[in-house]
Length: 104
Image (cartoon, rainbow, N blue to C red; front, side, top):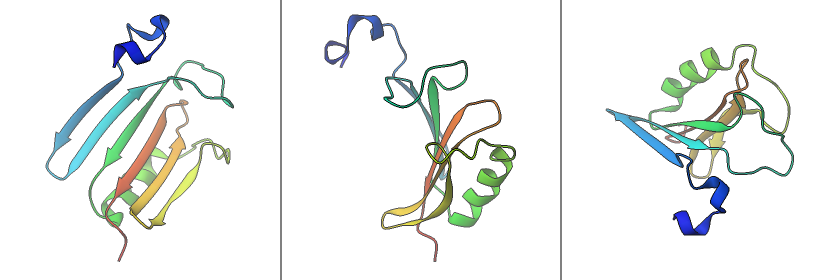
C-alpha cells in the first residue's frame, strides 16, 4: 500500500487491530480531512467493533462524557441498515467510531 500514498506519509502506522472475544478495537492514522485541521489528539481514530447495542451503549456513553457535540464529529449511537453505529471526538479530541450488531 505504501506506493499508493505520498512519500511524507510512508513512515506512518496506517492501522492497528486488537481483538478480545466479540469486541474488536482498531486504530488508524489521520490521512487527510477537507474540513478539520490536524491537532494533538485528532490525528488518529479508534474503532470499537462488535457486540450488541446495549453493550456498546455503555462504553459509548462513558467515553462520550463531555465529548465535542460538533455535528461534523458527533453522531449518537443508533441503528443503521448494517447495524449499530455512532461516533464522536472525546473531551481530549480523540476520535472514536462504534459499530455493532443491529438493535432489536
